[in-house]
Image (cartoon, rainbow, N blue to C red; front, side, top):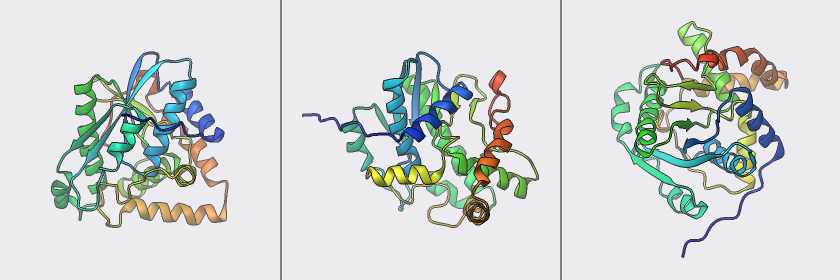
Length: 256
């Protein structure tokens, strides 16, 4: 007998912010088939429930499925997600790829986070194409966008960050990041209050090792302690970069 988990109450603030992001960046169109990349972390699990709520309430109809990339790291076990997604009644694809072994060659390079992220996205692209989904939803939030901006500036000498919505180079898939206006502390609070089955050590880029992103996170946290308005100001400053090329949905670039 298949049981279905009850719908979780989604905070109105998160609902408003994801709704605004989807509208501002034209992320979801009528009839879209959306595949959510679910790592099992607090952010992607929160996005899963936000998209489910939007699917029920939005006048724009769209399909929703979930895919997890298992990098075959000893620190990562996605198996608890299998029964959880089954009980939610959502199509679920578990993709096992030995990213961990390949990543070892890059762990001492500044770009290894980007390397692993690109590998995982490639697996998700293949899954989306195979299963007939043309939109891939990822769980990066405003903190991630800000961290990416400072990493790009400090390490590459470029004023860039991730895009909220873009088309892949092949032209057949679009990538969206609906949490672009949400803060990490909000996804953490939701995941904790709702006792979501969060899988820790879920990043295939670091496998428990310190990263440049963590350094940026600590730097921004220190600055925010001095000025609580920091991320409100950063969001306004980053908007042109987040939506760069949106009119033509420009192709992806090698940047995370």
